[in-house]
Image (cartoon, rainbow, N blue to C red):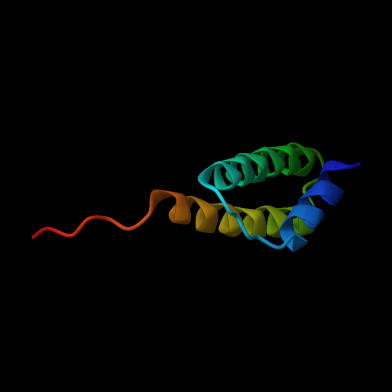
Amino acid sequence: MDIIEKAVEFENRKFKFKTTSDRILAAREAKDLILGVNEVYKQKKDAKLMELMKRLTVIKQKIEKRLKGRPLTAA
């Protein structure tokens, strides 16, 4: 399977993570996909690839925000 096809499949996947380890694995997968698409982008300079990387980055940031949790408030 091509890296771009994997990235599109990842983007369209439903994200329901039962455990923290599921979230960690999804964030790592997103990072790997972004870096893989970036390598293709360096060669082809296609704007569609840049848009795909941006969408994957948003998904990755949402996952990471959920991993970090809410900050403790000062009492």
